[in-house]
Length: 493
Image 1 (spheres, one colour):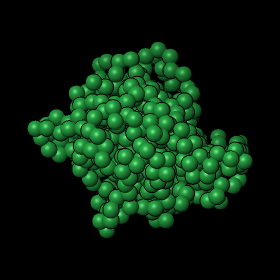
Image 2: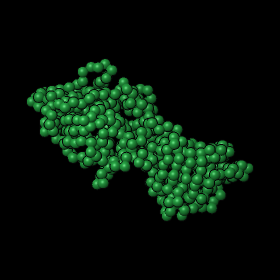
Image 3: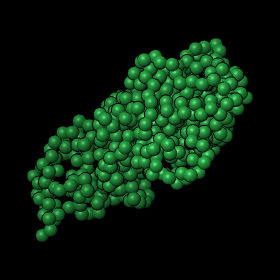
Image 4: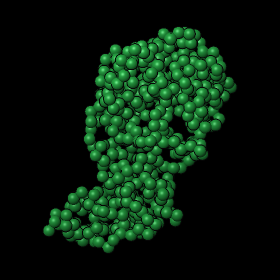
């Protein structure tokens, strides 16, 4: 007799002696399930691998035909018992489980991590109705949030009452599209050591030192000043430009001293107020947490420049900068496992505010992106507003990522890491969007802001040519192995 068959028979024998009462699965409360799961603890230990022993757990590759009621389990007693074991094991781990047939206790089921499902609530309090961005702060949610009641509605939606007092309703189509994988992916289990971000300097706001800055007239008239400007951005992550004429035309020509302005679905050069012309939280007067832009592009813009032209009839709107590289370096020192989790776990991102726009990268990307040549972290993607719900994600991997992301968020929101400044007309701020996170405080009144994006390749090309000279750049074409040498143009990437 095979080992799996013997385990099934033992489980069946134990089952006949316990026969616990099971609350109907289309409506359950956490207390009743907790009592039932304690009675089933010996059963879980008696069967090997309760998560994977049953074929009745549907993976994301399992087609679901018809309505939930049309999907019925086979009349296999061993299969049914194994499904029960896996079902209650999922509950004991604090996951949300949904039967594909709410009236059949032997039916296949889907399991979702509780925090994953809670942060992806689709109600207007959690997803902005205009911008379609997440507005609930993932890291303000209780890390051990639990469902207190899960109920199937008449329309086959699933309604959940959460332990934090919130209530959510998920459509069957949404749940079907986002159900998790039953087995952890190999990649997330393979921890590869990654180098820290390249050499850089960190501005310490506690010391009160002068900001890196250049003068507009110098930048517009001398290439040496452009080099100083770009080198400040590369080294410190940001730089101010003083003495900018307070008009959009001068600001536009300032950006074009680096390269052409990148066009996106927001247009090219921006000149805007908080009127939600584009459905994005940046076009509101609301508080905006530290984030990077363009996480939803395959190739996010490298540089971003802001110039405040006016602010009337109100106050507030302080600008925030946080060094994502510095926080990543600290995270790697405090917990290398968290650091590697954020480099290995890839996520979907999106921009879906306007009716004619639904932009997503060609592939999922991690929070900390590792350069394929230098093997060092070279790009940060951190935007809780634009991170989309991930599919095919095992609940154990979810827990790992949320713990690591919370640790990184704690570093990013530490007051000693935050650089706050009040922008003034005549002073432009430019920063490295692959490194520096930006945000702002809430404001009243009317603000007029202008600025634009610059692509990575154009920024790097301009800086390399000014710093090393054209001949050196040409002599080192393809010399990616020389990136460690400060004399090699590939040391800038």
